[in-house]
Length: 66
Picture 1 (cartoon, rainbow, N blue to C red):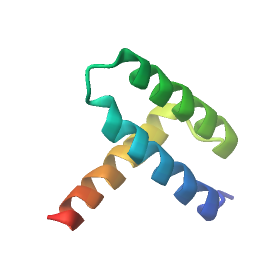
Picture 2 (cartoon, one colour):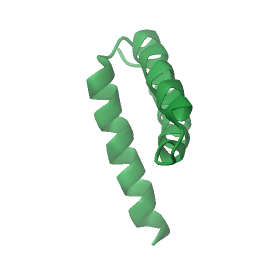
Picture 3 (cartoon, one colour):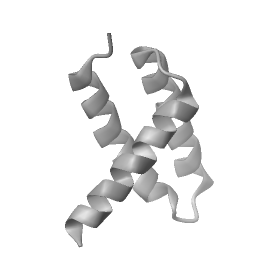
Picture 4 (tube, helix red, strand yellow):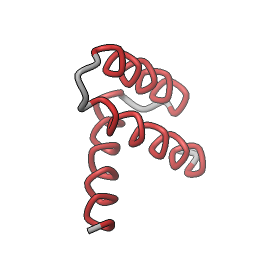
């Protein structure tokens, strides 16, 4: 069973990191990829699946702010 509280924490952190990745720094891209791998491992989710959840949450938060 997926820990919903842990998933929420992971998504919150990853959305913040992903929003910073759009800048010119490759370091931030690596930081996001590393954090994604770490959270995916901790949550026992495939990283691509977790990344899709991050993208979905990021899109939802952008719509919510507009």
